[in-house]
Image (cartoon, rainbow, N blue to C red; front, side):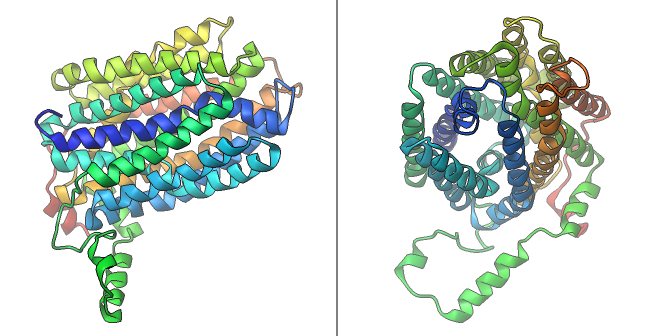
Length: 439
């Protein structure tokens, strides 16, 4: 970051954005249950609606992520970053105004619509931006530092929730989201891989004059040509065995992570009567351990062990901590399981680094968008699989007494990702020409 000041602006934007989104995580379960099931500690409707919301968001992201990554290769990262960061403000502002049942349903609808575009896109574009500016040999460390910035924002956001009321939490989150959008537009330089491809979408020239209709038609045709086809996606998969293995690992890893995210807080509320403060404490422990690991341990271990081995280590401990959650026998066990984040946070930066080395510089956005699209497909499948299972085993209709059964199943999905990661071998990066020849 000292050698590349441009990354400092990206990291600060990334921090502000994640601070705004993460600080609402500890309170959203209480807000949802207060709106749908006032006074209850178990609410199947809240679990199912949250799962349905995540599935619809994942379906939209499945289409949008490859498109966003591909368009960012053509029009620049900054132009595409502007849209999701700005759209994030809308649902936060709704709950900042009121959290009554009517406003909750308005939030629910707008959250689905905006997250179809926003979910994962800021992370995807930030990774592509880093890949534009960092040599291949240092990308694993750079991706780890970026994830560490996200983890530190997670810590600061969830810790601040501990000292704020629910209303103030959403008001501060809205203000921080607005600040991230303004800071990004003012200070972040653009990063366009090939200036000859096109002018940026949000260039000032478009505001200064009127372009003739023929030029606009040509630009629209060029834009639609950037839509990634099935053939493009298959070409990426066939371009490298390592790339296709990383895609499989990404799918099962995201499937388990989303399943845990959708189920854990409702499980802890029903099992141990956790509230927003205990959720915040748990997230702070997870975030601090993850931040220390990504900012201090990963830059040291990545050059020594390599991304493939570090990926397997992260996935093993990810699987282990999910199983510990599922069999928690006392209120302190989830806090102990949260400490596993010291090691399981390695997985996502390692996957992204492995993928970035398998494509040329002009396909970074496309490759990262494709992996985000794979994750979005997992976002669709995971809530459909695990949310009904969670609602069933937390209710009186459970076929047997095992409240953490759905989380145990999530752990098995993570185990599949771990086994697949053991088969990945770090082959030399492929060139941009080799990918292009496959089209």
